[in-house]
Amino acid sequence: MDPIPKSPYNYANKIVLISLKALEEVMGKNGLNAILNLAHLPHLIDNYPPDNLDREFNFADFSALNLALEEMYGPRGGRGLALRAGRAAFADALRNFGALAGAGDLAFKVLPLHAKMRIGIPAMARIFTQISDQYSTVEERENEFIYTIHRCPVCWGRSGSDKPVCFIAVGLLQEGLKWVSGGNEFRVNESKCVAMGDEVCEFVIQKTPIS
Image: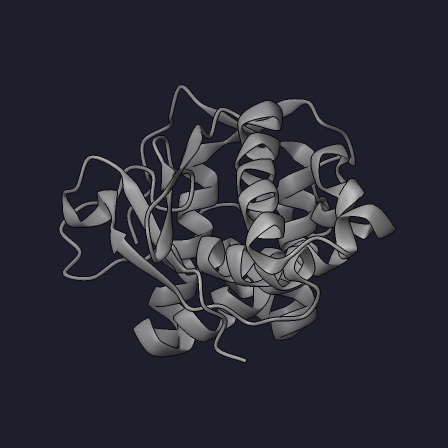
């Protein structure tokens, strides 16, 4: 695969560290090393970014990781791994960030489901806006929430795809919703994707849980 041209935007080191650990958990050390080589990121082998919130990891490199997953495992296999990694990343660490830490409090736990979602989904968007150059917004509609990533690190620099590709973001949202709601699973579909030529990456979150 060709290298993706560098972006003016960066991700916090900690998010990338969490993501790489999640990928390693899902595919093993050797699998991840093969992905890093394919993504033109061999310098990250046994040398993950530091555990801090400095914005030092280029969006293009994060996008290359996701593209390498697809190239190596095929669209379907790559999708499954990215979903699992996104979920693991949230379960492992992101729920400890300030904006969401309150979701574990008793006062939050006794709120009705709809109120939890109304508070929790924008809180997730705020985390990424605060600790990275990823800018996200949330809009509530009658039966769904629309979660929009205006600058997406997952598909940065990609084009010509015939389908959405930001599965690590879908996995993160799924696991985040499970945490915020107290254990429910929700349907999350990416309806727009920059890799398909759209201006933003947009995710439709159904208000009614699947389970």
